[in-house]
Image 1 (tube, rainbow, N blue to C red):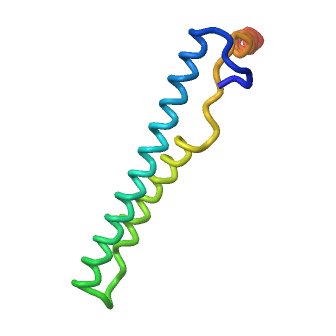
Image 2 (cartoon, rainbow, N blue to C red; image 1 turned 180 degrees about the horizontal axis):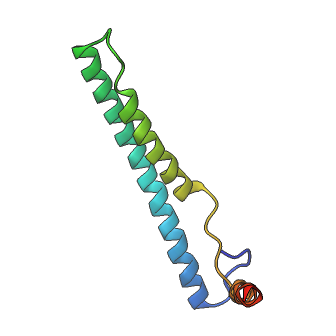
Image 3 (spheres, rainbow, N blue to C red; image 1 turned 135 degrees about the horizontal axis):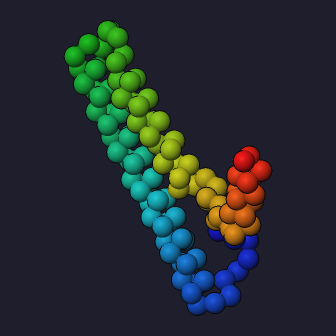
Length: 100
């Protein structure tokens, strides 16, 4: 997203779509955290019932889902992707020409 405010209705619609997408990603992240917590509790409970003094194997699904949580968090709350501008395209064309 740009640092300026929308000046036209079309540009405003674009911002609204981007913001709506971002808010949806944030909502999905919060839902994922709830599922992660539930799954973590469930596998820990199963471990506790079956082999409480044995190897703590629930660490692996908890860790794996944690990796997923990190990437969902980054998508929902991290820096939004930068918009590709005409200047970016021109710079890339120039870079390719310089390589030839």
